[in-house]
Image 1 (tube, helix red, strand yellow):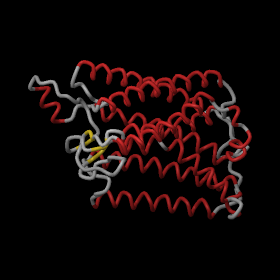
Image 2 (tube, helix red, strand yellow):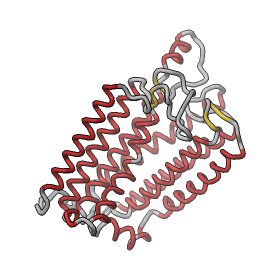
Image 3 (cartoon, rainbow, N blue to C red):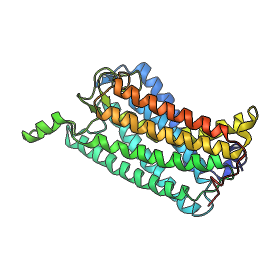
Image 4 (cartoon, helix red, strand yellow):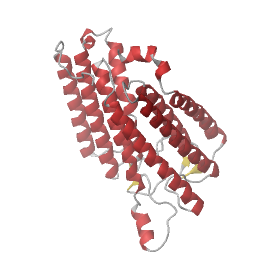
Length: 323
């Protein structure tokens, strides 16, 4: 069964709590947009409701995708159902705390300005740890899912693996920044411990809504890009299937599988590139010559891989035999 047929014919097998939560996050995103309009407060130079909006959109996409992926499992589906339910509960708890801190006009992550703020962030950190473990379990189970379409076979696996790496990259933001370490060495407790900026303090000029720094490195970028491989790689498989009606070369499942593998490798390279760029304290909108050369090499490699995949149609290599 192809990804298109699966989406059309098996929605009742999806994880219903995750589906419902995805719709709830979509509703929360609408409320956050209203909040951006009526509440003009800012925090660290960004609108106070921008962060809850980003989390709501990301959560809606994340849980809608997992709701579908769980339905692909041939075995241990009950285990996956409970693990996904835990995932929903933990993300929901984290989001409630995030919104509460936004309503209070204070930071949610890395905040230890008061004992209460410290407790809130510690609770969020525990929830994030559980989210990572639950996602790891689901990703391992996903390796044993079955798809007749070879492109989908590879898309869901590499999407899950790269997404797990992106989730783990969030850990880079928990280390104290140099200025925070200096305060700690002087016996002063900083209000924030950790942060997303590299080469400067959090805050300052950033991209609209996203808030990604335009003057320094930002560790939120590899975290975001990596996590959403879970959606983008299956979308690549979906797009190739849709285009197969117009381009006969794509009707060959082996060709589509090759293209998905090339796309997965390219996406993994992009995650590595933006992580490297952020760690060097470089803004995503101000790449230096070295970053541009690396990006050009990545684009060239993907282009050559794509041409090679399209130039050898018709071979029935067993790229994605279901487990």
